[in-house]
Image (cartoon, rainbow, N blue to C red; front, side):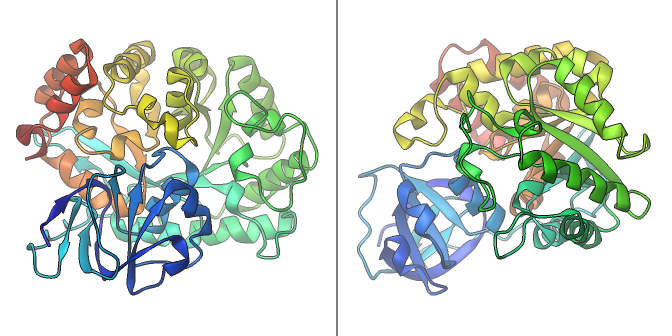
Length: 419
């Protein structure tokens, strides 16, 4: 079989028999599936070949958080016969028969809790986004500087019942203990239409970017009870672990002022409080948010779907959410300008920084803190170490000056950038 070069997505090496469909998934198979099949992927396969993917949809992102080696293909891009014994390399995108190519050795992880230093001596902080204690342990092993985002909406009992203060205290303590001695930033419960927990009934207005989600639900039961229980749980842990609190899906600084006062009624002033900036309105108000908060985090997955008016869960719209569009880099340049000298207090979250060739451009725009999936961190840390920030600044300038996506892609995926 001729080696196929797909789009890299989740690093790792997978060996297995090629099978079609989620029902064929097991530890001995590499499955080829479409976006709609991901919800039926109940067993962990050796690897995944994902066809026509909606990159920014939560089911796709879960492949990253689970660390399943994955590559991306467009329909008709290659013919892969059922039953073939394959090797899949997620970090290069190569698919071939056993022995068809020499696998690339993964880089050594950095030392946990520290900075990564660029080629010209600039400190860059590579943090991790996790879902649970197992993810926190993986982040520590991967060399994370901190847990930049703990997705607390996934912390609920196995039987699906509503989590109470006792459960949340134990669950959050488990994440902190697994990450110790790293600091942990807990994003407070962040529910959206596509990630509704089993304990939550249908709510009018619950939806995607334009509906009720995140902090917009904090005044509505039963979300409010869980939100308050989580604040009490974190208050019980603040003397034991280094914590930070992150509020999801705020649009206006007034929202932050109101919720900040409520948080301080439960948690002491020693725990830093920050805001997710996930819409253009919030991101362009980064200066006002930083005046009120201890830090901020750009949520690029939601921000991009707002910016490009494309539902990130619909594969047929995937072309609009183009990570190589010069528009997103110009936008992030403007946000960096608004943050000014406080840009170091802005963390970059989301898939964009984890895609091939993108990290040097973001470093060139001035960003210095990133929260990524544990499986990606050693590779991105290596890329950060190889980056000269002056050259990256020139690269970012060329990207922002480009007029078409293919020009940006050519710049960011050039051998000189990827070397």
